[in-house]
Image 1 (tube, rainbow, N blue to C red):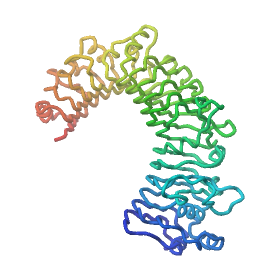
Image 2: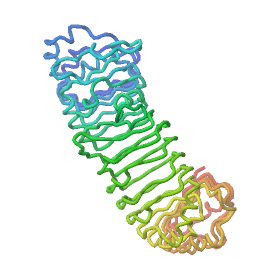
Image 3: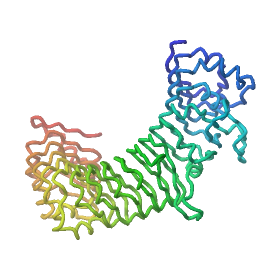
Image 4: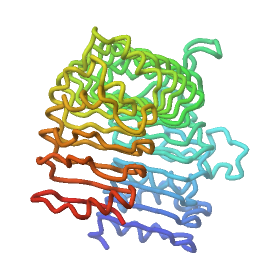
Length: 473
């Protein structure tokens, strides 16, 4: 047992306890997982385990613990606090679906043991057993904290305390609205003032969801930041996101923020390489003037979005997806003659074929992948103008038709695409056959999924050289 490095205790419904003497023998243990054990460590901590002698005696057992993952388990705050007291060099702490935790605090500097009574008690039936105390020494060792689905959890302490994790690189807080609310503070006395979240300087990645205030501004200790990835998800009350301090951000993803109207501070994102904005129906415009490093841009289900200001600055754009955002094609039409997508663009994913015929698509000399999804705006076939625009994509290697329920006819001159290697037709029920003139001689892979029986039967008979046909039943 002394050489055991990883231990997983999963779905032991009747297991109520494990002696600390047993854990004390696992002095090489690095990873501990407790999953689906609702009764384990759910009773009160015995007093003899919290005295000074016991802490010194048992500390040896978890001294090498690096990662602690607890999910859907009934462990009390007292038990978990005690474990953390012994795990002196813990790197990762992950808690999922533990609604019994109601209070989170960081150990005060003068204390050597968890203070189970200093935080105010909530009305929860768990009482003080819902208090989780992080030892002060772990603020310098923890590199990842992930807490999800703990809806009653709140932070007690100064907002600067949470920013004191000097080694924290990754922070994930999902489905914990109370915790997020208790970590932000008003910038001023006005209740409508901007909400500021002071974060540790070393953080490289932040993921949050279910934030329930109107504004959020990210700030960092010492006004220094290492943040490179930020995800803000499923926060229907958020109206304004402010990113002025996120000067090193490379990856930004905003999804399902129904009331989000503005993203401020985009001028600071000179290092941004990936931007995904999905299901934000109130967002009107994005300011992209400073995003010259941007390589990947995805806009989806943003019904009110009518402008991508500074689009001409995206000289390094390689992958572009524009879906279910009806205000953008008219915006691009107004840009016709004034702007073309950069020649570096390699992948284009759209649901409106009119974009192909606009002048902004004239210079797509390097386009390798074209995905056409849910072409609901057109008829049963591509217009002559659209087909001519398609045939201009001489470098195209991958062409996909996805969920095109209205499309009946594939492009007549599909065989004229000289570089095409892969063709995918997925969930296009009304397409009965391939074009009469066949497929490009360069084609190596044909994918037919959830299409008509007639099309499948025709493709089954294709046995030509290196062509591989992939179909589902």
